[in-house]
Image (cartoon, rainbow, N blue to C red; front, side):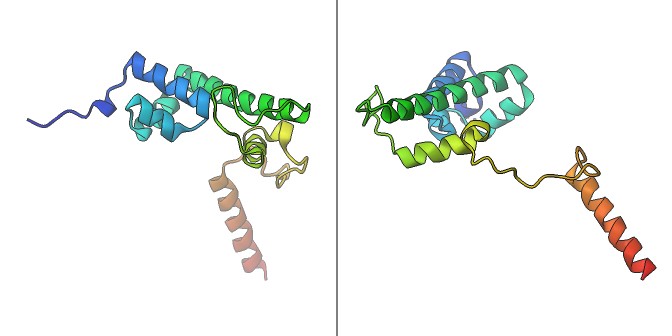
Length: 142
């Protein structure tokens, strides 16, 4: 008889461990390892279950809040070489993570490639097909 893969079994306890570690670290790999879950299972669950997706987002928001608070304290002159739990924070990497995950607050203010009104809201495939049609019509006209 084949041995069952417990990492594919979801439990409330494993979910709680995953979310706690994600909240503390912002690291999905560490969280899945601590919880004994496969990454693919966790991502699949996030994609299929809005309630879990919301819990995941809340945990990530908390992890980012920790980074923001640490940098705020540092900027205000508080000697904060470590997080309260003893972890050392690399400030440059913390800033990079906040820019990546909270661009509306920590971004550089530059807009990333605006779409014109004709293509706004359309899928990449439909935009590609429209562009190919335009190219085909141009070559027929010429």
